[in-house]
Image 1: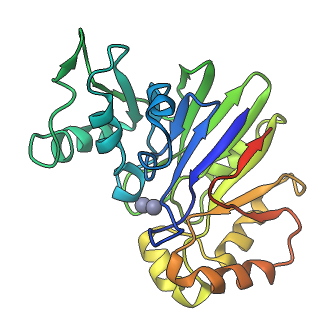
Image 2: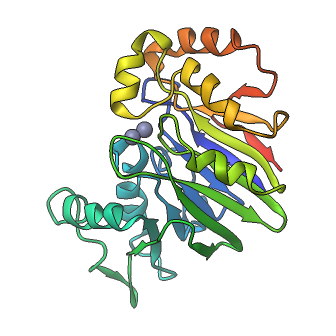
Length: 254
Ligand SMILES: [Zn+2]
Ligand SMILES: [Zn+2]
């Protein structure tokens, strides 16, 4: 499995991009920052987008991906999420106010977008892979995703604070090769992190005690740009060898 990091930051500033992971050049996990990173040809290969939750830093570039898709006759693009997320897309995004309703506008014989509600722990086959969602703990309805390619599984937390759903999935399968976990705020903003459903280094450290596989690589992402250096110092102070700060544009193979 090849994972290309299109964006892995908890906000946008020059050099910082919001969350998007391209897997095997075929599917996206979140769509926060895509349209000015991938060429049109690369965008045209994406037909399946799995959204962890409706927040704008995970969804904003669906607007520009779908706009760029007009004229392509090999559609639709399927956008997957929980029932709540899919309903939010229809009411607040593809509503002919925020953006044209691309679920009703055809390019060729097909609509540009198809919204698909997926139940947690239900397997969805897309791009030759199998994707399973699990509930996490964010300020709005949110899930993480486990992506299986052959015998390799990689797990994405989405936005979450302390959670059992993530670690149950990771502990439950020997084939999990890597975990991508958010760490949004520094320890001094613990109250904000708790209220908004995010990790700090100290709550991440406590949650990692639920992990039974101490050597599995944990890639940390969604660090808030304003607190980036502080969060990194606090992560380094944990002295856990398996924690890696994720970088934009990395291509990781598992
Ligand atoms: Zn969020
Ligand atoms: Zn976010």
